[in-house]
Image (cartoon, rainbow, N blue to C red; front, top):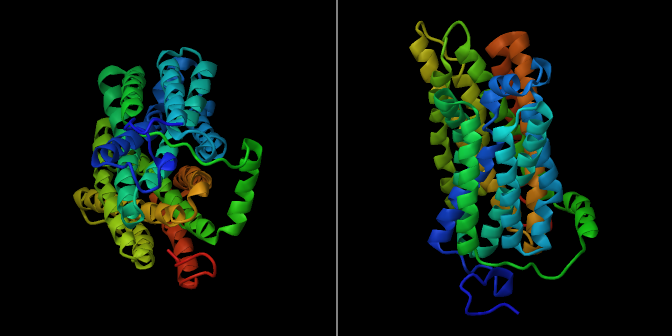
Length: 413
């Protein structure tokens, strides 16, 4: 029996909606950003990593692919454990895996060793997706959207900052250093979370095999999950397409940006993360449906703005910056709205629902990256931006044709 005098004893051991202090909220926000950034450090460094580890140019894409594969595995097989075993212990275990994988990647001299480390970095990074439903359980229902939005703003900042930071660090000290620095950060984070996170033991329920099997049932029986996953998969596909192809455009003969210049451009998108906590507050007020429409329209419009092309390159770059901010704001807002919607369902399913939601929309992101690279090779930015606009339009058409509420599912978010 937990000791009631232990300040870390909470959640399922006492009651949902207790135990989340402002300090813990800020720690979780920073933790999610630092953890998820590990998925993206290698993306702008594929060239030097492949050269250093002896990986052929044709196989260099595996550096990113295996990290995403590991993340997908973790979302489907590890995140659901948040409904089964004590959450703090699960999170700390994942952080240890991440730290060891980062150290291995930093000192790898062979392709097979680095690729194995990349896979495990992805598996370990799902700790962020255990932290978010964990925080949702701790938060009172009346402010759950705001709390999720605040924490997700940290996660989104991690995604947006990882690439430019990795580029700048590699430019100054070499590609190894970003993995070493992140490993040190993960060690520090493990200590901090061990000392500050409350314990949460989920109530007794299904065994692991039955838990995984139940995810198919949850997908079939939860229309909100399917709808929200579709919206976010389309938007994240557009997001990934944009950030895969814009660096190619900027590095091309027209703009001729250096690696440092591209990194500085990427910082512009960080401004979009401010939409996450705002969207969470609006969702708490019951405005999820109209704000969803606004987010979908913003992402669609961003690709139109990106095509503005005046007589000088300054206007064209300014249009791309504005498009990046609008795109990231729309994606950030819709992500928070989706997570708040599924977290409003039964708490005992929360980790499984989050794992399904994240797996589906990250699959959309992988498709967007692949299609973006192909489109840019075949038709340059005009073809890439056209497809980028079509993706959120698919979600917008689905959104426009839906009823405002579905029986048994509560208000349509």
